Image 1 (cartoon, helix red, strand yellow):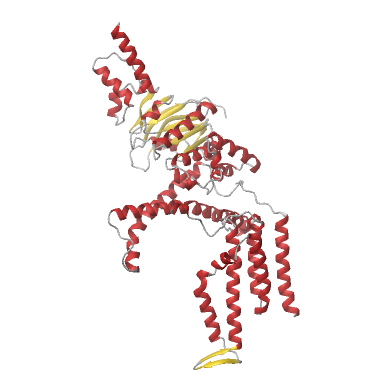
Image 2 (tube, helix red, strand yellow):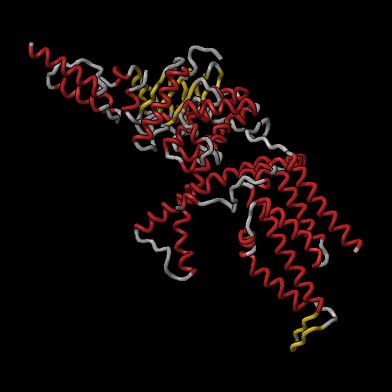
Length: 267
Length: 283
């Protein structure tokens, strides 16, 4: 049960999008974010909409799966919409109700910002839905490598991500075990209000932390015993390769960017 | 690197802190190439400390340890020492680094800077040797304890060490996992000639090795072939150790006046000797 949890929201598959180099996907996602911010009128959201639809179709993702990523943000979305609707000023008043004015500009702005938020989340979720956490950390490591001149610890960051991923199931299992051991001795994690339940978690966290630190110490020793000495002179088992598909994906993205920039300027 | 004794400890002493008592008390020990040596001792006898001195995780407070002729205390030898003397630890969960089995086996190779095309056959070979090939793409947390320890063995094996040091590698496993790991390592020792230092507190395992070293308060109390060491039943008991059940039974029968020879360790030994006894009584 607890052992079988999936990490992140990765949906394994073997589509073109899944097979793209993680570096390409990270870079394209960045480009996509730029694209979203370049859109200045709601009408032009048709370009990112088509782009996301194409990517989702190629990745074999359904509309429902994509929409799921928006769900946790619904509160923020409503807030964004309402705030922009009522407080953006403007001159063309559509509804006047006491001190509340709803203007044409307000409505446009509310739609604009909500769209921006929705597209940001839906688009970037394609990256996390189609790229395994391991591939992601690989991609990040290689992309951030040039920052080493500024002493940015790219390798260490990626190693931390890998180890964190490796130990999440182990620690979950351990939490489960400690919980059961304490429940067997009468601990109560389920009743009471929020504060009481949070308090009941304290005796759970202490042994968990102690054990996590002990594990960290042992793991560090095991890594040293296997000659780990940082990223210097290290080779990698997984080699990332750009393919023709990566080139095509980049081309499509550049085209979308150009369309938005040129289109908005000319029309 | 060719040397007769891949591990050579010369009057090694180690203390954890300045004023602490010696955890390892002037041990002199040489381990021959290709041997399977068990190190026994009760808790706190210094056996784990001795293991960590053998691959430069600890550096001797006094004396020196040579791994394939390399002094572990010399900083420039550090990574060579650790490559020659691979180590497997007790807790299977705390020594696997990667999220996929084959990537974990690759970890040591990546650290050594082995080129990628060369890595693949070495990983496959190591996984084959510990019979974990079919789990190459599995996630470590889905494996059993014995399987995890075999992955750890493969990770060390891929680095092609001369010596493998296993620090109570079976202590946290169930009996079948223990047997699985022990027989895998014993086979590697026989077939690939890898020298093994097997630290344990299970007498059954020690009984199956070539040589048994018993530590007590950080010093060597007994050293010899298992048959010889385990015939000193009373002495082992004063050191706080169990004796393999058949060795103990043989000791009791001998006390009762049955003329049994020394060196009985297994049930097979016992039946053979008892049959011999019976036929002598009948004639």
